[in-house]
Image (tube, rainbow, N blue to C red; front, side, top):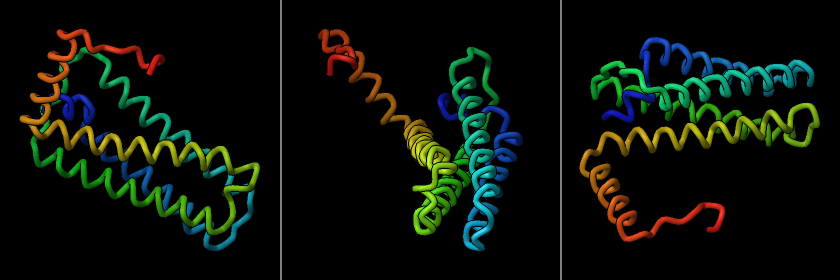
Length: 161
């Protein structure tokens, strides 16, 4: 559970950030359905993009720092997974609504929508990483296989693959 603990960090702040992002995505969906002005939508999409970028910057910083992580119960980890799955669904719905409204072709919004789609993929990957970290046997077998491959010299530079 060490990896999931490092990812989650401060649980209260984590939940506040996740629910804040979901709230922003819901508000954006409502605006798009009402066909509000393009500039207002573009501004809010950029804001959502920047909030997601900051959230993942904090997550990556938490993973990379060597500080002692906060102890988190398995129940809190499961709740976090549920919240992340909900965020993933909300962002997917937002992106779908934007495609239906043909906003992906709008020059003011296309980049933000592309970035939000990438962040949504990162949310899905984060869910997978946390779920894998809960399965001790799987993580042990992954590390064992990696160690064996390294000992056999089966290490490749990703740029060569």
